[in-house]
Image 1 (cartoon, rainbow, N blue to C red):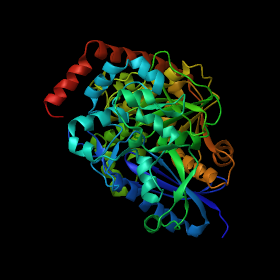
Image 2 (image 1 turned 90 degrees about the vertical axis):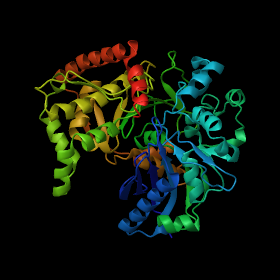
Image 3 (image 1 turned 120 degrees about the vertical axis):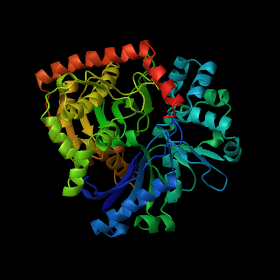
Length: 518
């Protein structure tokens, strides 16, 4: 039977997406399944990876059913997944404890223990990442110290991509090279595990997954996975990439000057570079690109659309209720409120650190701040201030990336948040740059399908596949008067942060919240 299609899945923090595309990048069908995180203790965020994989397979089965295609026409499947998730497996491939999320910040003591053995700058120069609670290394150290029963049974410490492909039928645990950097034990300049860090922290290399380049066939779909997914048994499984690396491919970041911005549960700004780089300030994340031998620099915010989702659930309850009655989308109702509110939210400034501050500030104690609130403000001002605050943090990230000397060639907005025209325009105004959206907005899923195509031999390389399959949609140009307002707002935003940081307000609030059981 003639091969016609490519399948991609993206297993994110709050939901799994699946889609099938033809070889020109046209989506045939897509589906989504939502799930939750658990928060058993302050700073703890965990998930059950079995539930996540099952959700992805269920979404894929819906895609096959909706499309009406013959499952034997699918050339290959590849996986994108949330990165830096820590999974402990025993010798019988059994899960030893819930997966520790990348958002989990319990290992702050271990971050200081890392600092005692290697300076922050030396650590950054090896890994390309600041010493932080996000990566696998401090979480491994935390489990080794606090859960000895789990540690003594641990055969492998793997990431979600590795767990997923193994569940689908891959013969072993394979970690794509772009995702390996998120372990905090990888040398992205040498494209290998860092022997220095492994020795320094007494971690055996065999404990970790086998690193492989993206877009390589690593197995075939098992009978069980076929039954769950609806794909044919024996469909090739191709190594994918971490969600942001996959999304960079799905957004067409394949040349110098290409930048993408994602406002998912978390936020990311990514840029392609073809030469090794280290930030002199040690703030910009450097990871291997899904194109082997190249790099990707990143800025990361711990909460983006996830922060606005909190607003919808906790403050926009009326819109959520009306939308449920009318079979409508609460976000559309919130958008109308934002459109009716002028740029600058009538002087409200929001710092969106509901899940701490990531790059370029890297402050686990940072909390959300709403400044300037007066009786004259309404919920429309609050809604717009939340969107503007999330985007102010992204502006902060982009400014840090541009310090590397990148000259923007194109700026692509990706993800489900691009359904909001007003948020797209706010971003163009905030960055004072033209931005474009994608015809298929879920770039991580598209990136996975692209890698499936390369692994199946449909395309000779990732750039060729991306050029063929990625298509842009609408362009948004910055409005000069709004850009001026946002420059002023950004200055205030930075000074509020500095005041709270320098006077240890964030730190003291964090201590108080722990004391009070938050």
